[in-house]
Amino acid sequence: MDWAVAKPVIVMLALPPAGPLVLALFGLLLALIAGARWAWLRGAARAMVVLGVALAWFTSCGIFSGPLIAWLESENPVALDPDRLRDEMRGRDPPGAIVVLGGGVRVNVAERPRHQTPNAFTLERLAQGVLLARASGLPILVTGGRPPRTEESEARTMARTLETQFGARARWVEERAADTAGNANETARLLKAAGIRRVVLVTHAYHMRRARPVFEAAGLSVIAAPHGYGGSTDAAVFTDFVPTSTSIQWSWLGVHEAVGLLWYRAQRLL
Figure 1: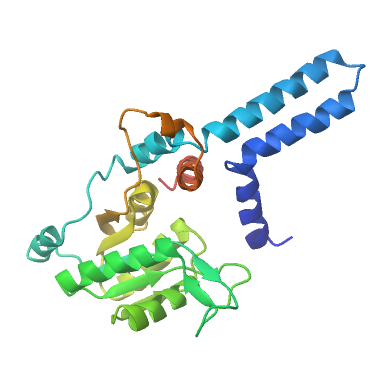
Figure 2: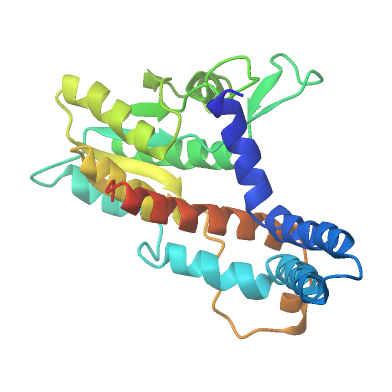
């Protein structure tokens, strides 16, 4: 199987809520295999089932997702104010471009005029990028490769959306990157060729903790422009212990980022 296809499948099965449920399912299968002969193995299987179900519930609740996302966002506690960006533009080392990272696409044959559209996260990033571009006059770079089973690169979809829905234009369209490290390296290659070494980096606040260091490692000076905050350190209430679709989404994103941080550090990319 092609790694580009296998990777998202592996990720989906490993992260919550699927990961804990896979653990519980494995425990059930192990219990069937153990039968009545191996009591110790049957006990271990039961523990797997209980642990898997408990983790699936816990990671689907705000009591888990809120603090996790808040920790990821803690290095960039506030969004970039357009007034502050204007101050940066008047400084001694102003940025030369706004870099907007892709956050995913959707493909559905019912969509018109194109089957492929940006998902909600990408639309939020584009909106933030346009806001800052209009405040500063800086050109925009969009970055994102072509995911499996899609019609075109993520960056191409983003560039078209900028024109049709925001009345803006991307000066650079980076279509080769497959992940955040790739976004950084390919963006640095394009912008350094244009004489630009300082950028405004636009991505969600939970993602900035991982994105900013790899862009800096690629040789770019970064002004962080996080947005879309979703973390919470408020005192827990009863509903924080009840699974919700929103908490499941934030938990998936949070664990994905935490694992990504560990992976990048193991590869010495951070």
